[in-house]
Length: 191
Image 1 (cartoon, rainbow, N blue to C red):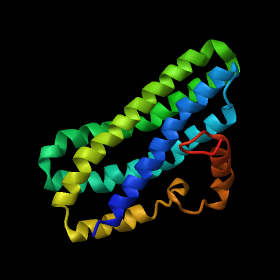
Image 2 (image 1 turned 90 degrees about the vertical axis):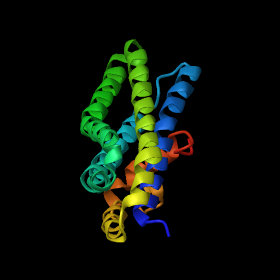
Image 3 (image 1 turned 45 degrees about the vertical axis):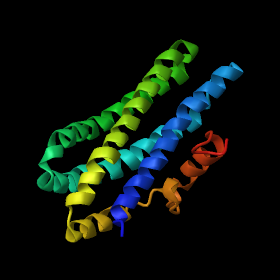
């Protein structure tokens, strides 16, 4: 039986990948129509990335999963070091992207290319980061972690409850998720 933590991690990766892939689609739609993008939904999407993957998902990977894998599979230590550095830089990276979005919104067309290029770099980086986790860390975890390790990880990751993975959004987050789902393009939204 697959540990619940692995299912949660993979579902959260899929939700985040969908969110990330929707951003350039939204930007491309606006460009094709000769308009500015829907800044409100872009802000909501970036806020989601900051609130859920950055604060919940990464914290549990770096503080709970990675130390267990590091202790039992030292051959992936360098990879875990790099992923931990990525996590540590993540909060700053999303803030920088949010600032570039604000500059685009306030300054207009003169800041479009800078934001779009920064967004694409961030997206490419993040997708590559998740791929390394999926291809190197999770297989090592499956191979080396004990049932007791998984029980602890299962309890921790089950508490994440990311609404984009099918959980009911907390009341305070419901408007955020409705905005994203109704106005962002697929694969994350219906817009």
